[in-house]
Length: 81
Image (cartoon, rainbow, N blue to C red; front, side, top):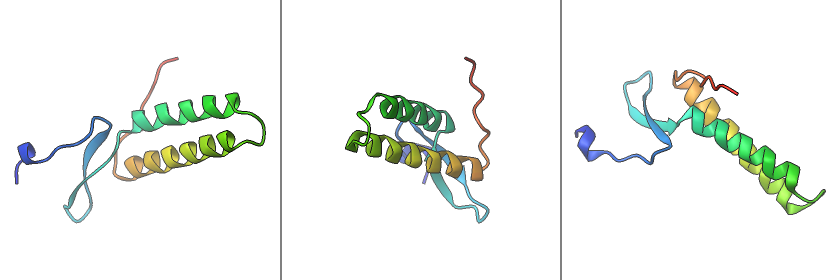
């Protein structure tokens, strides 16, 4: 198997675990973008609505993706305001 045989979506990055197994995680910068978008969605949703719940679910999922990338050894992305 070579790199040419593997295809990732643009938001995924390669990771190798402690056992040498190749895998992928979501790019930490993409996770932060998703978290920011989810907060914006939450703030714009009607109070006590399904929109709020969906935004919180998206934030939770992006948080887990960020955690996975950090645990795989990728650095926390530094962004400039």
